[in-house]
Amino acid sequence: MPSARRSYPRLSRLRDGAARPNLLPLALVAVYWCYMMLWRLIMYSVLETTVPEVQAGPSAETYLVSDVLLLPVLLLFCRLALAVRVSRARLWWLIPLHFVLGLVFAALREPFFRVATHWIDHGPSLSAWWAEVLAQPRVMLNWWAGFAIQYVIAYTTAIGLMGGVLLYRHWRATEQRRLDLETLSVRSRLQALRMQLNPHFLFNALHLVTGLIDANPGSAKDVVVRLGSFLRRVLSEPETEQIRLGEELEFVEDYLAIQRARFGERVSCSMAIAGSAREALVPPLILQPLIENAVKHGMGSEEASVRVELSAQADAEWLDIVIANELPSGASHPHNGLGIGLKNLRERLSALYGDTGYFEDALLPSGRYVARLRVPYETTLAA
Amino acid sequence: MALRALIVEDEAVARERLRTLCALEGDIEVVGCAENASQALEFLGRAEPDLIFLDVQLRGSSAFDVLRALPANRLPLIVFTTAYAEHALEAFEHPAIDYLLKPFADERFRGAVRRARERAASIVSGATDTAQDALARVARASRRAP
View 1: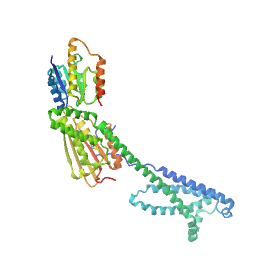
View 2: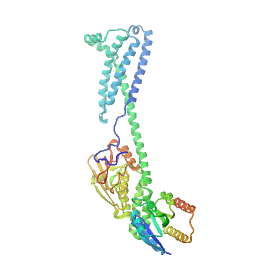
View 3: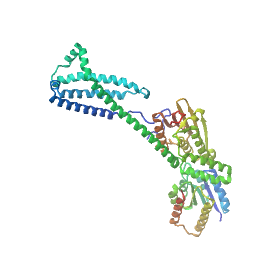
View 4: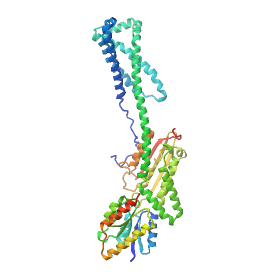
């Protein structure tokens, strides 16, 4: 349980961006390489018994050992490839990178093979080979080029395999995020109905109307219309994942108008909304739990009245919404233990904006409760 | 015999409606109106109403706190009013006359008052309501809630 009083400036990330260890792609590369090794071993074992030239050359075990020695190098290269982060637009940079790494990998095979020959077949040592390379670079290069292509292809296949895994994961994550959004959106609607706009609110509003019909018919009509428009927003199926902040505020105004009719002077509200902020897109019903909490906790004690201060500002990058109200003295942090509405709010922000959406709230020592919402500033609906 | 009533309700419009309904009855005299539990307790400290219309969801403290603060030997007749039947069981622990679910019709209010009158008369004659009758009433009230 977090402490009741948190310092205000601390921004709590919705989800920390700690990367998961990419063990699966590396394991796949290792399996692929073992498969290649096995085939080479079988191939040379068979050829050794039938083809005299092969019989005269290095033994099948030599090939196996050099391939085994190459495996950590391959894994290291793949791990490096995983560490490289490029934006989607610069994805093509990976092609020259892996071309060069592929050549290096193929080049390394030769000294590794020499080491293996030295061990198994007691052939010339590594330094003898190196002297040979220095003496006859052309001949050695030609010899190397003859088989290097196999290793370049093997390397490319390993990288391709890994890329495939990553691409599949990315696709799965995107799909999962889309599903999460759908679920959360449906759930938030149900919750809005059951929890946030609790039945008390609905029945009290209706009861308010029965009282107003005789006492103040004009006000009664107004409350019925407000309630109708309020319920329409809660019950209607959303056509889009996001709505304009301006529309969301109409919803808030309906809610507050009904609460004002119930409690009179005890509920008031001020809104300072920048023009550009009205155009910004937000998830529907995102402000409702915050406003409802503000009213509920602001009026927590018998005599208390609540003034909800809502402000919204936007720049090219961010939309910032701040909801503040004074809490009766002695009140504790209203969201200790995180209400289900706020949990849902965080989940929805996370599903829609990943790491780029914030929700933070704090109870200042002065008794002022501040909830702050930051989402990327967008004005065009995603297709 | 006129019943002296106290209205405990935190919404002004709802308070006024109860006051009007009581006035229409003729034999119910509203002797006090309280917006919250403290005001109710303060009133009960200096007067003894026969009947209380008690809103279950009061800000700050619960309506049951008001009842617990009263000595058991001089409990007035209680009519709970609430928007939601979640407190029906707790209300049953207190000897409530009726349980009005908001929004209620004028006729429903008259039923509660009628029951209060009968009870007041039976207390005078020494008869008591059984617990089963009270439970059945609460259950009926809960069923009517959607």
